[in-house]
Length: 426
Image (cartoon, rainbow, N blue to C red; front, side, top):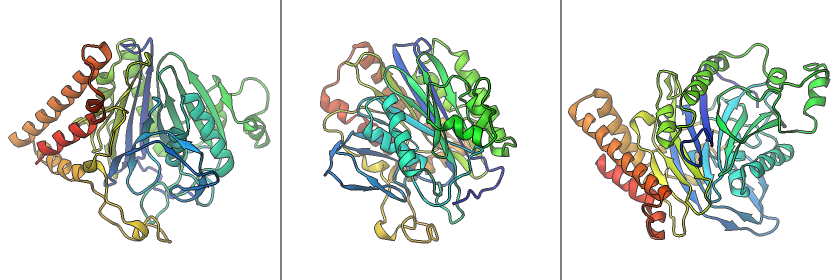
């Protein structure tokens, strides 16, 4: 399926990671803004670990793949019409976010795995960021990537880059069709946007990456091999040129806070509208956001903050912790439509359905009041800020050992914050 989209469509995302010593605390800190079609609903879904029958098959967004025997528990922030996810984490402290990218390698014809499917599959099947890189590479080689990435009769297709993190390090994985290159980040702050960023510092790569580039005439085979230089389009689409400024702004914001990066700092970066990182442009906006704190100390819990609502500058980052007894928060789960879902009926996306979950509906009403700037809107924003500070304080006490919540408190943490926010908008 060929890509079909306005050449200057402001499609984008931004991912960030801080690895000690860039972090203010002994933890890896991951963050992502998911920038998607502005009316798209993103839900937060908890899926428990599972054991599966040998030889069983798994239905992803468009195609089936072979299921593995065991899958890990995951928390996902995903566009509610598809199977995969824009960002998420698993019970082992692995976090992944993806970005759209266009390269010299053409977007494949037909439906295969979406980048968002690859992201979820890697979270379900990996216990480290490095293992997740290998899982995605293997799936690309076997199934490929392709298919429309938006809920619209006009297809919109792209390849993907990924930022993957765990408690000890981060990896950047960038793809061009079935080909890929990966870079290991063992210290410092890093970000990715809608462009190739891996140059000569390649830690792992597809075995045919260089021979393919040479066969295509993109590389002479002599001298150093720069992945971004070799595989980037000579004439960049307007959407990718615009992403360069956002990428540079994100890198600068990280550099300004080297050594002092916290969850709050990452949230501030995700809320930065001047740079375009917090997007509200044309038909696209930041539809959901996530920040994760992954302590080096394995006895301390990883804490994942998710909004489940658009515009992080006027949303609440709510804490989630993997613990026995965790259940789905119903207020952030979208309705389902089974076999009648326009995403499943061929040709796809000929009609539209209302996918808004309960918190999304209430947040949209609150967002309208906040945009008007009236007293009620200001009070709602103050309630949001107070609730978020409560979650950040709970994180601080957990990481410093000042407070140890009982398991039932940890498992119900996200649900409790969702309910508080839901009630604040009532």
